[in-house]
Length: 605
Image 1 (spheres, rainbow, N blue to C red):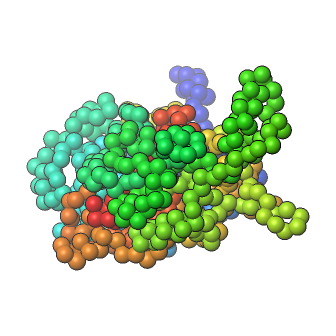
Image 2: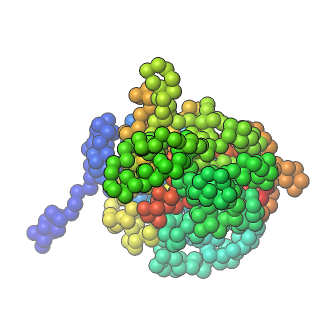
Image 3: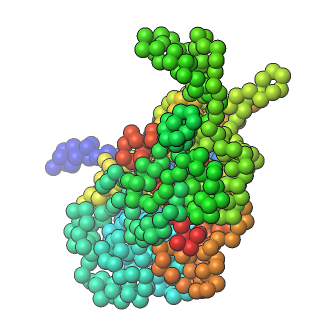
């Protein structure tokens, strides 16, 4: 018998040494070695406990805004990927302490919990849900609890709903009730009493089965991604109601197209668009109106007066020759397989065989852009992409965002810094994850937790998790050749998405500034939103989805009930290129959905 015991003992895998793993983690961070960081994080998560998570959280604070962005996100994912009770309790306390101090990385840690399938994540999120001094974290916790199919999750949501009462924050109550609907599959409206009474009567019956769980007690998780070609098909109850409100307000969304009218004196009917945003709006069943650029400029006051949101297709804005002889010669050269020369601003040079040229440009006039700027600052929402940065954004708001323009030896303006065609990995901007405009953008599909995964240190543990807890949140992004790089000039501009891959390849003309921004947004102007007028008439409401919840909002800044001025959103390259996978496509779709829904809400829709 002793021999048998010894043999079994030899088969036991020793628990990872926390001290050694912590030293390895520190070395990996110092050496910017993501492979070493991953090994250390895996060992620390396996060891579990408060002592194991502490060095990870120390690393999070040390790398925020410094060093490798991918390693920062590895640490965020690792810290949020612990599965035992002790570690997650410490994480919750750490997040609350950091959140009260407005530390931006606290948001990212809560965001990281989205992919934690441990049943102990509920207790961590429940603590965060109760902290009124960290409002944006409360909103995130309410959303994430809606992904966790357990009685404990419902208990936490119901308890906070009771605490808010009828005069509590409307947005938080709305998100809580949306999460309750997601878990219970019930739709009891937005009366808190309905939910409280229903749960009191039905708690002992358990929850409906989901994801293969039994009796509603086996944790199962569901989230964004999959299930349709458009992000609008995977929205939770709250976001669906907001989308329905958008759909009830036709003709408020305008897409500016650079296709020439059929009666244009030159190039009649020619399509100068590099992208067609109207296609995705149609797919998501969002009502909109497409207007040709020439028509928009002729009747700009009418269009701006009616529109709440404007999306501008990227288009060819450069001076170009439309001489029939040049076009004919280039086509003949192409058919013969001859070299057409290098492209400049996505255009070939005129062939030497023609001396007569017809130069045109389809760029918006300065007076048009001035009126669009005033419209935004009064409350309008403007989306641009790619060359829209050069055509509109840097003309209207040069002190916020612009392209990087190199100068020649004589000091004269030369050309815009342009990128080469590449696929890059994108990540959320550090500290940006609680922004309402990023809601659902980086959400991953959540697989059901496995039986026997108790998550306690020393207990049975499922180690081959479907989602690598040390993997940073990311998507792929396609950048077109000669896309203008984005230079952020004002610290008030939110860099929503960044790419470390891009930053390694794109430097500003000063040779030092890293141009790694993929999506940026900023507010402009001080115009009063229409929602503030409704508030005066009907009492405090958020105007979201038409539910008219009363109560005092605790939101400030980006999370405020009524936001002054308008919003500009710009993305690098084109939507049409982000089609490599359903998950990646959802990135910009959710971004645009959030953008449009915020505009609709601020206009009182």
